[in-house]
Length: 399
Image (cartoon, rainbow, N blue to C red; front, side):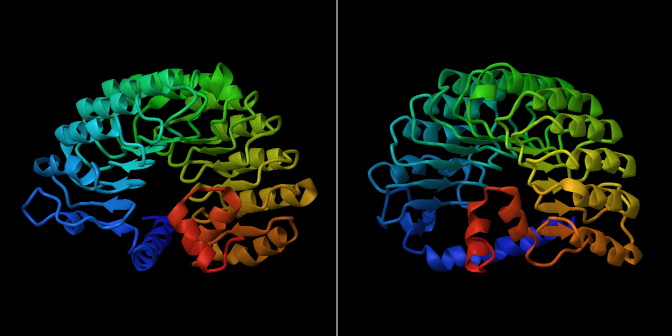
């Protein structure tokens, strides 16, 4: 487990504690509403968030309708880590066709397949209220991706703003469906596609959407393609798109297979791109030579605010080159993460001197950053995580 994951895990526990303490009046679970083993409603608490995480199973899906209909004015429906399956989603889909209060639906880790996600997509075609849908870590393939792509195509100006579809099995064909949808859709802002072997074709189709169609002129700003086996060949398309697309502000290509050539291509693109604010390349295979290209880019780029390079193959020489490039002229970059690279402790004092003489406000060089690590990422990199944001704000670490 990497250091970021460890810190995030600790903070998540704290977040859960804070939420439970501060939102009791708003949060309810299945046990608040049903007698154990019964299906009828026994209480009607005034909550807007229904959290049945890990509490519902496929044979309990028929309780969902009575839970929702005429009982609660729900804003968030959290049903992650359950096992509703396709039948459970079919019942939920019926409610979504007419529900006008829910804005977020979380259905990750629910043994959802193509049939279930198709039901949800069809229901949302008649619903303009749900703006965030989480379906990550299920068993969704190409047909399910097609159903979601059709939803995005048929509703280009309303509906979903955030779609979490990572860790499924949409593959290259599913990626192509979504890429084509992004050429039409003007409303989606965040697309998460982590841990799916979407490969070269998806990278190409999504990148083409950045160049051709509404992705370019629309409001899509955040694109997360983490752990998708994207190599330098796939980066060719991404880099070509970045040369002409100035709408995208956040690009996360972490945990892929990007090496020297990929770093060079992205660096060349960012010498002319004026829109990107956050670039995450953590846990790739970028070495000192790649760091040289990134340093040369930073010497001329005046827009990038956050650069995440943690977990690569950069040693002290590459880090020094980046610091020297920043010291020369860059006033835009405020945050850089070089932790979990190959920087020895013996070089930290020297590198600290170099980085202290830049315009950076925060930098990380060590493998085990301090407890404010995640809050700094939220502050400088524009990562949208409501729970983390609230916690960091309570700690006084955010404006």
